Length: 434
Image (cartoon, rainbow, N blue to C red; front, side, top):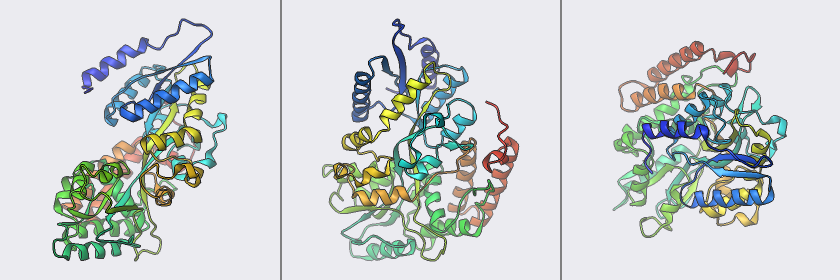
């Protein structure tokens, strides 16, 4: 189904009167989550099982657009109108602090969520003002794909990755490209930058809420990204307009040595009907720089979280469903059915997980352990727009990396001051209202 803005508004109005039950002894929940294809089939199966285990609760699946921007728009319309449906919201990893600061989702701490059982980065991404507002449902992380027929061993550093790419490209009949990634001016550019930034020991905002995106480590990271395009020539200029799918097509057609992409591409890469690299690729975490003492392997964190609508009439029942869907057995089933990465670390030592996600479990675990959330702030959308513009300016050589990052830092600082986020982001007094 194709959702237009008018359709989104209509559905928002229509559902304000939905989700009623005539049975006074029945609690009715509405669940809004991924509901397409095999994932949708799995969700409905798990919801039916939950209802069998909890006869007094009925759960209805409330379909929303699969497109993240449209889903976000729909949620904002519902929540601004204080609509209690859906009872449970599936959130993108960067939405949780926005919804929490607005008072749209409830803190979960009173339910005693098992924080320690989840990967630390997934908990950090869902924590705002010291409180946990959502449980991580499944994880998405940036990964490095490589052609094993050209590069048998995982590169230990970014510099080694470039050397390996150059060597493979110089072979007779070698690929046209060394490294392909998402370089268009959109969110994908930010996630790639986060990984290079961590590789050199840099950050966008530090733990005190200070903007540090123009520090020397960050400048070196952006210079490295630019040099891949213009100095070492391992990345094609085409990537400056590419998203995930253009990147995948280049790699699966044997036109690249390395590819930075998300886990979803593993299935397509392994399909001999569409992929020329089936059986000839491996996946590992992005490496750190070998020249940065504080650099570390870094994967941008994505994925889905489950939160309780602050206006639902049944918050306790809603948490019961969230706890069920994020329990180990349901996560294991999700990995087996659709290959999505569990957010509970213990499952990566479970023998039943073998063969479920298309890559060695240890490689997936290492990537999630190295995962870094994008800045956890309610103003992330505006912050990202600033960074997208400035990073792209540097990569198309309209500005030097240092100049672009100084501009980004100044604009982000102005945004933080204008919105009053300084104290909130540094753990200061929480004086905000929805």
